[in-house]
Image (cartoon, rainbow, N blue to C red; front, side, top):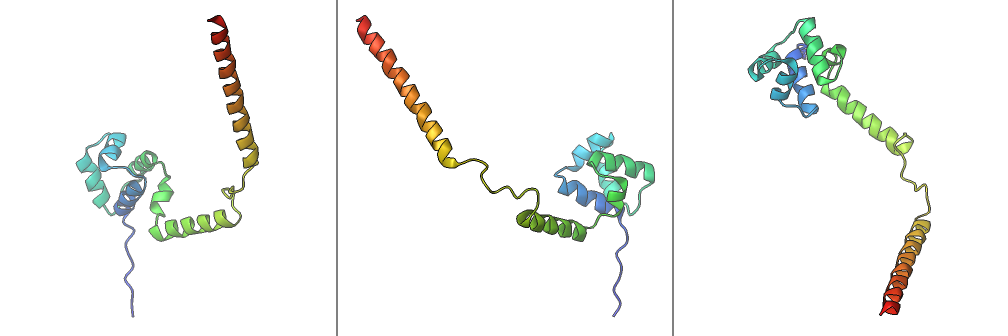
Length: 130
């Protein structure tokens, strides 16, 4: 059984990266100083010259090599590995409180009591004036 290899379609990669970045064709067109139709044509192109690819990469916030080597499989692989590492021992594993929540409750309660004492004092002064 023979499997057909997919061509390295740069336009589709640009389109997918743009979509993943949450960018519309109009926004990319504005960044590149071209029309939305030109971006659409660009995304249908199988290959693009290096100068234009460099400009597109800059507008998308990625490198030229990032576009050339882009594959959705690698993105999902990286995301899964990132999530797995974050949950187990990564830098984002900060689910532990760095303070005692009861201390914060007591602090808030003390501030509320102090505010009430100030109100009572103010009201007593108003009553003394009358």
